Amino acid sequence: MPYLLDGNNLIGLFRKTSRPSAEDRQALVAELAERLRRTRARAILFFDGPAGGRATTMGTLIIRASSGGSADDAILREIEKARSPGEMTVVTADRGLARRARDSGAAVCPPEEFFARFGRASGGASPPESAGPVDVEAWMRYFEDEGNRNRE
Image 1 (spheres, helix red, strand yellow):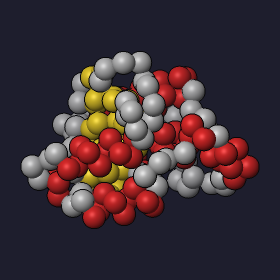
Image 2: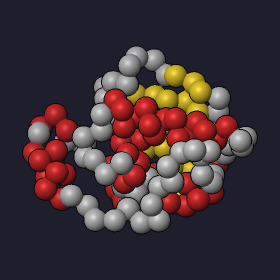
Image 3: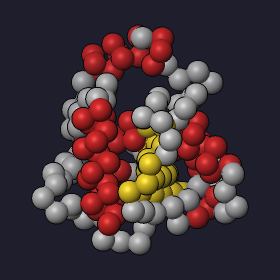
Image 4: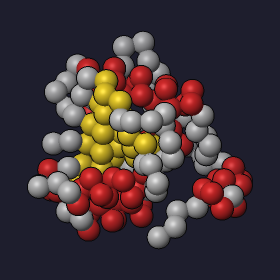
């Protein structure tokens, strides 16, 4: 059962930023790779925009850029091309993506549950129990920029 991870959403929740940097992406990738290393679970981590070219593999973690669309769209395309969409689990706190994933036949898992399921990375920071307060102003500035809007 592969997990489809909404990378920018996870960064926003756990790194508390609306504009993920390369450092934020690297920290999330390292955390996920370490957590998954001790398991047989497979996951595909999707990021909005270019993430340095082709897909990268770190053990059972595959990192992909959305390349020409949003990460949400890339996740939904992955579900659509699956033989058994019901065996896929989308990890996101984005209600819109969660609804669309369920409508496509996939399961949805909240990020907190996913991180709890795979324990703490050795030496890594543990995500908070709750995402805590959201910097609404930062998100408003982010979405005021036309380049950051999801076009459907």
